[in-house]
Length: 104
Image (cartoon, rainbow, N blue to C red):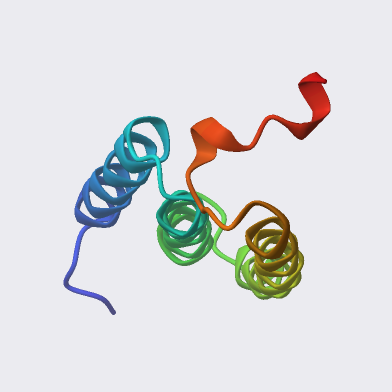
């Protein structure tokens, strides 16, 4: 049996999600924004595992879904970094304010 209550997991996940949201909305460096998005995804994963283990109907479904989410997030990071590298080669900056190629 676990000694950590569900509220603790939810609080940690809410704090991580808030930090990630703040970073994604306020930072101008595209790499930092990508890291903050990953932080928000990991907060969601904490919630999935916590509810899968301590929820009303504990089973392994949430943990399996978390593994699937982690694999999708890894692919998302790979694609995001590839896009950032391509943008950096063309524009020589990682500032998100200067990435307006689709507006023209």
